Image (cartoon, rainbow, N blue to C red):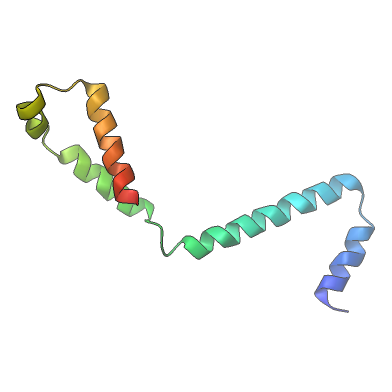
Length: 88
């Protein structure tokens, strides 16, 4: 018997709560496999942290000279927008 046939036979004998757990686990494994396929394309946490460090080190003087002193909320919004742009 193949692995698939063995699994199907075993699944047929399981109660509903166990079947639900199996279903959730299979969905988890599928999602994990899909994420691993993108792992080489998406930036790592180290790269994301480097971007954040660069953004934190940017002098706010350039903004302040043109716009006046920016409120912290607006400065945070600008930094967030830059992080999102770098993630594309």
